[in-house]
Image (cartoon, rainbow, N blue to C red):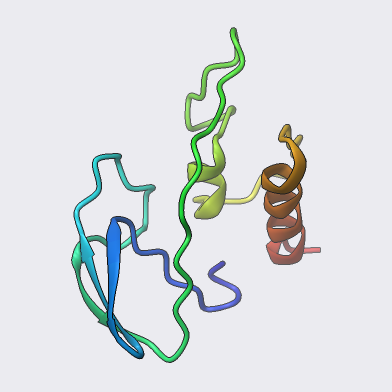
Length: 104
């Protein structure tokens, strides 16, 4: 996302006018590096409706070796290899995003 100059803003958003958005605090913790509640202006705005990661028993996320999509959105550093477990659009979207932003 950084490569494409996308800024992640975490919270509940309302579009006030073309190019203007107000974001209120969310009930869930924001991923590291995401901006929070405020008023924002941008030429292009994408509102993501959200998703909830499904945790596999015995593979609980530790934010270091086992990630959810929260950590994958803004990783501190990209690992040399990565296994993506997901279903349908969530897994394939995450994989595509990582593949296009990872250094070759």
